[in-house]
Image 1 (cartoon, rainbow, N blue to C red):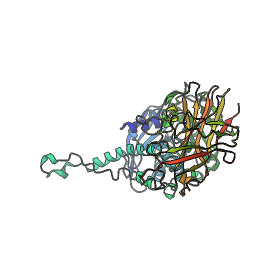
Image 2: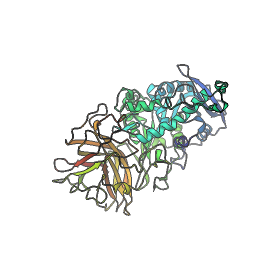
Image 3: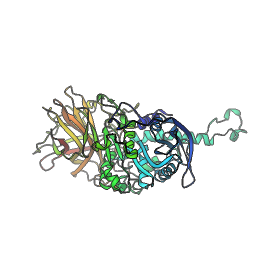
Image 4: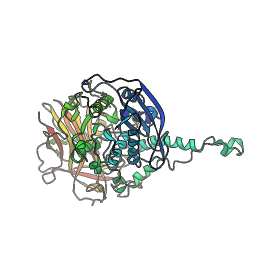
Length: 587
């Protein structure tokens, strides 16, 4: 398997130190039997193949199903552990991947194939008819898309580090193309597609008459056409149109009728979707069981790694977690009725950075958090770490605006953050942002050092008054925790493509020089700024290559190649009170 593929599967199946209570009764333990390459025929005749791990015992057992594009053969330890505990574990290659038949296209068949596979699994002779699903990233997508199809025997899902919308929060964010993720993920996926193409087309009989012998081609891989047709389609659909709406999870929360345990992470690329799924399903789930059966757990790394070290920061001994144990413990309670403490836990569990501790909560967002405006201030010289930008709860009066020149030929480089899927070439997580903050095209606003602990937990938004010399540009924002030694730890970040400032469904260019009020969504965080630490905001117009560069010309981004510099302005005065809105938790 490729290095990228191994990394992804490790995220889906990682297993480490324990989290959770002691079971209320002794756990069952069975010998395990394994069946490889078990066929399941879909409604259109395509056959998908699965490996089945089950107790070597008479009787019927609940099923835990995972459907993956990353090769079912990379799963063993967790299914063995779960089967020994009294579950039938099924690991299936999705359509068009590895051993399964059909053509691979992201998201397209997951609802219908998920439905058919759940019902097939429920009818197996050793199944008790109760099927749950689990898995993360795209393996989370295979769950929620199946749940929307409402297979009668699906009884629970456990999606982690996955999205709620495959346009915003997966392929795009704030209208900008998630270039690093989309390109690295598509390239990783294409490796198996290429391998399948080679195996299908490589036949020495085709060239037996070819002369001279030195012209024998050995392999005939063909060109790149057809290796990732979805990648071109993503680019051709930059707006939130019907291409994306057909697969939207958050637009169909009311069709999900089963309880869900949602797991995300503060440095995970799909954090926004995890939080939206929890909130949306609790409010709009299609049944009482769905609305009241939601759970949420947020740790630190996700796709950035399980910890304890995520990027350059060590988050302590309470990381990483035994996610497999959490899955089994929850399903023991939901499927087997075991009183193991799950029934007494509060529905939300979050890791609070800074203090580096776990904490249970009644809901998300926290009801006791108070949205507090931290206004931007400067004398017009907030450029770089050497500038005079500051943040305070005092509203601005007469102040000069801040300007910077954004040159797409020299974009602000990505440094850590919520990234996937090639950690060798672009590392995710928490990193010192001072190299970025040294640039003149980065505006830096900082509070004085806190005299006592200051907690921010919940959604983070930046409201800005902006102007630009261009008809289209981007505005980026980053929330930072500055340590007493100067280390500037990135917490969360966001971006807004100005053509989508009103709606992601319809683009509208700007009028150069006109002032616009906009909101940049920085998703969320939970962080205690310890005494002596400072809170910092960075603003710029690029974060490359995480997001594609806005070339400032107003051309369609997917086809544009001509660069133009833009002078971008942040206005912060009495009439234009630009502010960072933080959910502050009282002490």
